[in-house]
Image 1 (cartoon, helix red, strand yellow):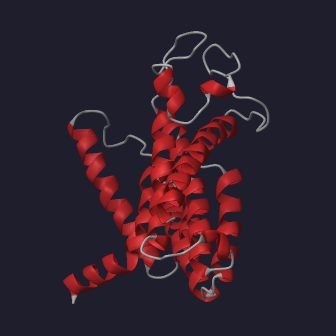
Image 2 (image 1 turned 90 degrees about the vertical axis):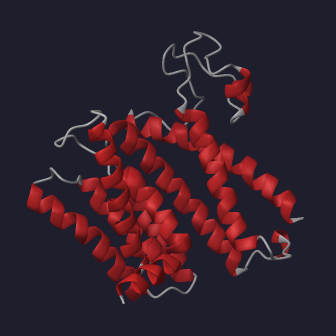
Length: 264
């Protein structure tokens, strides 16, 4: 039964990924969230059978049916990544447990999984928008803070731990923003830091920040070495913060213990 659910979760995650692609595009271009999707190049409406996650991209050979222009590889990659992340969240909470989800609506693992799915969705949109357009919009980060906070409180997490973690996360970026007059980080990073805080709590927020800065430094040096960036180039830091948040969410305690063991 668990494997049946796993297949369903993968398909569901791919469908959500398709929606997140559309959501990111429409938010950035200030378009209505309602109505059928259209090709961004020829602006013709996309048929429903050309909008099936993953499969339509393969069937069309990665090109628009109407104008034959290439469809950005972002679309199937986001669909695949979201499907895999949804499946990973499901497996972490349910694999190894003989559980019928339809009979456990009030179970803690189910709501942990739902929280993780929501957080994944918010972070995927943040990742897309920061990578493509160097922006983190309040329309995503502010509702995400409220929703994730309420779910974690309902799950019994300490409000003081969540609040202090949110202050640490947002304050860390706010301090950099003030000192650099917005040159080091953007204001969107401040809200993202608060989201990380209410999602992770203490001390996982520190793990996420450490991972993000290590990854950012490594990728930054790599890009500079290959002359893709220079020292004064802007780096979309949300691209590193989003995956670091998920890693810390799921494996933060183990990473924290390993790091503390190295120090002490």
